Amino acid sequence: MSLQLWHHCTLATLQADATEPYGLVCDGAMVVQGATLKWVGPLAELPEALRAQCSVQHDALGALITPGLIDCHTHLVYGGDRAAEFEQRLQGVGYEEIARRGGGIASTVRATREASAEQLTASSAQRLRHLMGEGVTTVEIKSGYGLALAHERKCLQVARALGADHAVDVRTTFLGAHALPPEFAGQGDAYIEEVLRMLAQLAGEGLVDAVDAFCERIAFSTAQTERVFQAAQALGLALKLHAEQLSDSGGAQLAARYGALSCDHLEWLSDAGAAAMADAGSVAVLLPGAFYFLRETKLPPMDLLRQHGVPMAISTDCNPGSSPCTSLLLMLNMACTLFRLTPEEALAGVTRHAARALGLRDRGMLAPGLRADFVLWDLQHPAQLAYALGANPLIHTVFKGEVR
Ligand code: DI6
Ligand code: FE
Image (cartoon, rainbow, N blue to C red; front, side):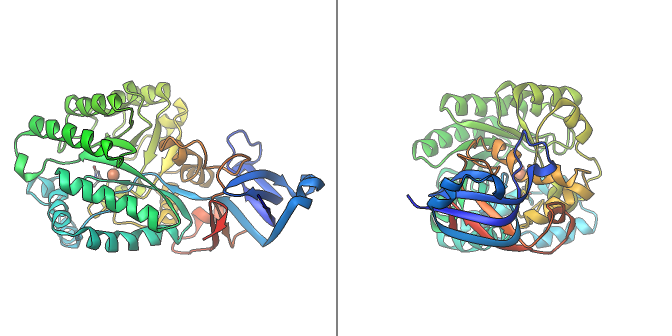
């Protein structure tokens, strides 16, 4: 297989054991074999014999190269929008109050059920392309706006089809336990039974990579969440949890007991929750877009997460109700300004730690043996990625070794 050389670039490798911040390599080079990185380091150290084997040479013209960005928490397949609810909220009606009145997630469920697979594909592809336009090479997409077998299947199939039709890797997560659908009003436990049936069926159809639930006073209890986790674990599926977003329900401890890949949101995370996550090796997925858009004031406990050594990922949470956002670069900036992450922590949050939040060991850094998913930026230093708002310094994205 022919080898390709990329040279004349600064590399932000994000390698975990790097001594330089960002794993920075000045005057770097990478050798790509097929869809895989074969060699990464300073050009001056590239073995001459390897260089001689490179039949294609790409001059990066001084670009900064980072790993492909990973958006590890999105709900990007949905029908309609919630701009009217945004207006209501600006007049003082709360997010939880709107949910209790039958709006919120329930209104997106109605619009998603009404939409055909073709309509969902068209509207979701626009959002996906926006993410890709900023260097996203892996994106997680949750179901959870269908809440009935046929509609959950439709959304997961749309997510899979988006991945097949675009040069991006899509990972699907079943979020049947997102909200109570109207036909199960007042019957949470009965709906959880239905969630378990849907999960078994859809996992059998190969549509599910991981399982998530919304553990919250306006959604599902820890006991109900545990039933979903048990079923998912029996099917050998990885777990994630929307935990402690609006209150501390102890979801993080529960998720940790089940070895969840990640707990997401976490504004109300307790010390015990952070300790449990650290023991379990769960990633904290922080979602500054939702914090901003809901005008929350309770910050996730970053210092606690740092003290316990919990890895922090950053994601858009792209969804119509709490974070109608398709810019992962904007989230980098907000992670720094709102959550006080350093630009280096934020960049690790959309690369190395985001990969871990999805259980993917083959990406998220520039290192030999990992996937050749990377981005060329018209920048000199990686801090500039988190610094600018609304800029898009992307030059090229390379996905599985090929310029996209
Ligand atoms: N938490 C969120 O922020 C999203 N889902 C969830 O469990 C919001 C969903 C929505 O409002 O449509
Ligand atoms: Fe979410």
